Image 1: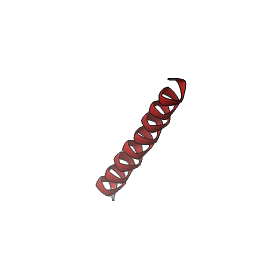
Image 2: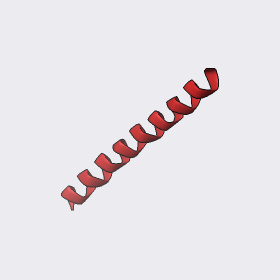
Image 3: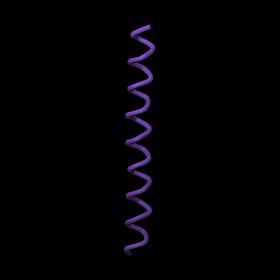
Length: 32
């Protein structure tokens, strides 16, 4: 159970990081 929870947490973390990076890149394109 613990290993599965850790893997799911990592996937969610990576997903959130991807969203944050996407928002930053989008804002930079709007600034240009």
